[in-house]
Length: 356
Image (tube, rainbow, N blue to C red; front, side, top):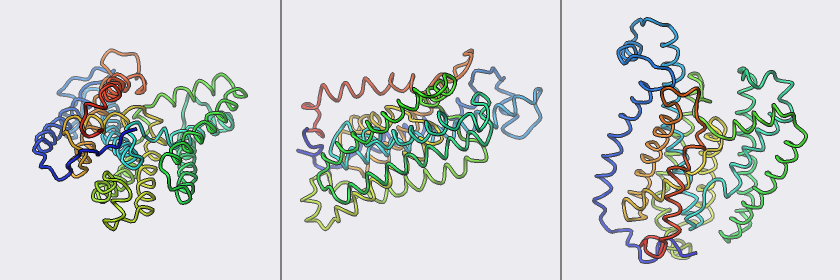
């Protein structure tokens, strides 16, 4: 596959970045507010405002819905979209492959395996799956995080031995196949209720982070985003090839380790709380590249963060459309935005400068 940067002038001025950044910065608070005012339960706008400023409202349930459901979901969507998008960008640059994301390295599969072990093996001993009591939901989060972290450690171990990015990518795919095989076996021996609950978790949603868990979640995602920002210069050097980057003094082994660690951290924490959300990590970096016309991470990474947050807020808003009987699965919505982008990129690789 053609490198990302042939013919790329990474030092070229990029006036588009400021315009698009401003557009998305304005869009985020608008969408965030819309997520608070709109939902499957109809709440008058004045009541929402009263709740937000701390006034009493006609129905106590409205206060609970806004402060304990809509607000945490909106914040979770904001940070999750940014984290998943950056994770995809880091992996695409590290492997110089436009179709690389956390799923292809097996990290998401590791989270799936962790949850499968909890739901399909010990779920009955922890209580009702339909009830999702605190001990059960936290065990699911723990299982997903441990599963993703374990696969990340395995991949990083291979990365210390295998220097070829393509080979490492293939190893990640094989690890994903292995975890999928184990999950299939667990499904075969599980009850229909446990298998159904696991399927629902795999569809993804932003309601898995409670108000008490929100500060921890936001801090961990923010750490991953800060690390990615600190890696902007090495990322730009990698665009020109590992040999060139090495001649510039970049420690390739260390940078690849940090890239995998950062992408794995963001994937593990978001997947643990929200489930494996598809297409945001794969499509958002391409949307940013198409808009900016560059692969310079100095502009690309911040815009990717903003677009990821915008897309997640839009998807969350659609998932709780007014009048719906419940939440739509995120993975039923994200392909609507992501799949056309990926098809366009595949069909126009030779016409897009930053992939030629």
